[in-house]
Length: 82
Length: 399
Image (cartoon, rainbow over all chains, first blue to last red; front, side, top):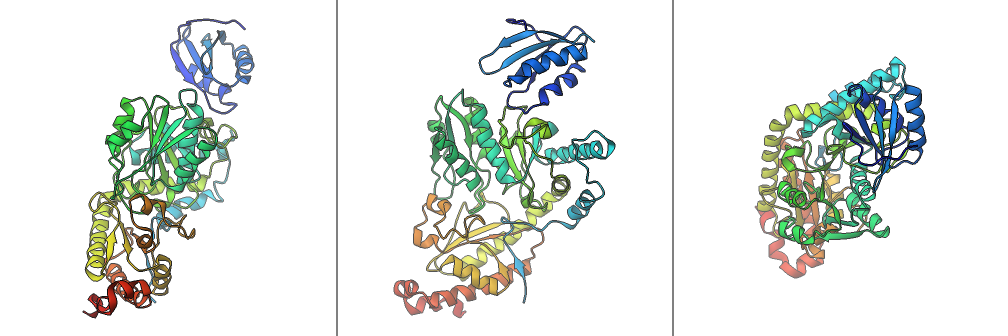
């Protein structure tokens, strides 16, 4: 997985403290509100989300740009491809 | 025997309209809202409709309401949920000394987990001093919890003034509004709070349902872990009949609140004046004006509250000595201690909490029986005889 820094995002989805498997349900809903090419930032403190979201992007045809390790959470950047 | 129920702070009867709305959700619409087939997904939509009704009652956004099992759980989620989610920012919590046990014991639990807790004192009428709150906030403070209205003494706190202090200092503010929602106008934006607890019990909904308002996607660590229910913030299959009941009760409360408040004012004022005229050495506890409309609380000298409740019960009157949770503990109420009531006077605590269903004739009945019961108990009291002698015990009741 690629690490990124200061990645621009068009919207943020804060999933910190929220229970599994919300991280596999809410990004899809939120991406529906974005245009193709826009980037969604997903904040999560759940380690399992790193692998799950990567696989979810592959399966759904979205692009996982990369990840940044924040102070209290991970930040994952998903580009809306379709 | 006549029956008069004046302990609505402990429980209200489920309203007929509420029960009617709930019943189909026990059998006809029994499905699990997390399932994807129509039977479940329709119920999920019903839950969202109820969320909107609760949100409307307190002036919040629909997504800012989490359903819980009670007001106590809402208080636990607010205090523990914020403390655990924000502990990297700081580990200091401030609560008032007269909070409900669900706030008090949540804070004590966190103390055992090395959080620091400040218990703010209150004045003789039960009010928190804004300056004292301001001076208690440190860079480590993450949340302040001060109840909107106290269930034992009825005092209403100046919440918007207190919450403004916290907002200026970047500290989250929670208020336990279990006693006030349904009894007075409660608006989360006017109060300027980040979290607010609600209970179905105060609204004519059943026991076992409550809600927490949390502002704008605020991070909260769940305290009940399970799956995706309540957007992953509160696990466990939803109590659908309870949620439907709370939604309907919220709707009715919003429609009827103005009328209810003026009715309760009339009842309460008659009761307060009547008791003070009729009984010697009685003290109204809490704030004389800034108090819940249907709430009248007193300490009656040389009377044992438990005996008083027992004898009123024999006359068909249900009242309480304090909070329902604490009334069996045989311990001086911490709320009465906090407002400086001497322990011997605090023993004679009695709380009447009224609702729309109460009538002025019931107040007259309570006044008649209370006078009789107090006279009888005092005639047996060595404390009363020693202090006031024979002539005083007979005074007003001889009228």
